[in-house]
Length: 389
Image (cartoon, rainbow, N blue to C red; front, top):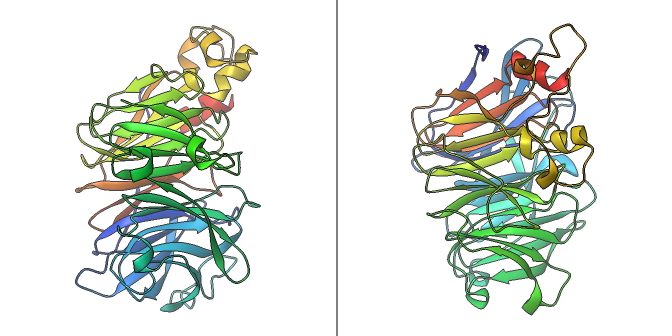
């Protein structure tokens, strides 16, 4: 069946960009924040609001002191971001507040240039031999922590009023690791996370003694460098990884000898993978080939486990012929969600560094390429009905 992908909504700023985050603390408005590198022009943070009812975009632009390499929205406050600055400055990483963010739709008055307020500094140049390049906040509203990633370490910070305190450090040199590329928090455990270095994916439990914190390792998760990883929010033992070999792989951390699934629909490095926070059978991937892929991974999702009434993925029968709906067509096998590429989006002309799901609307996602092109898309209606019916 042909899939109608719907209209793409483009927000272009003609500035170089690497980082995008959904506004995690706002469950009412579909909002994303992006930061510019500020190579030849002043750096900015753009707060972009998408109204799915009106199919319209609005934004507020915030001036920032230096280029931005990475940013992450804090779940506990929709106006706060953890920002990784792109230059050797006094404050390489900081917690900032976006001032005058409206609770409702962004108006023309709101869109006037606004300011960023620095709340707390997380790093100093002397504390880290390699400048940080990524940051991830814990997804829990009540766990106010963030992991700051550099090639040589992952530093975990805990936020209080008004300061930030470093609580743990994972050193690459002390754990025989290659340069650390990425990290992801376990969705339901406060002190567990995974990292990617070289071809390896590792899991850590920060409650343990530093010498025994590593709890799992997949030595050759990909044939090239692993650049992206994400946890399934509903099956927290399932990880998605993306590598320089152009493949996306799903892993069961309880038994990681071989991947649960391998997807090869990219032709270059993969920079971003993201499970849908509500419907985890939907997976986004994006990379250096300029493509954004929406994949269905239903056979390795919580939906399949629940439907089968079993305790693990290894027992799930992907050929189960049970009905999926009662609308007269739901019993048709072709109307059930199946594994495979749902849509491939080619809205970008340069490398896509991030593809993220909206927190407020589970069917909306955004992607960002290096040339400053932000594109917002929605899950095709046909795939949505397959999931819901």
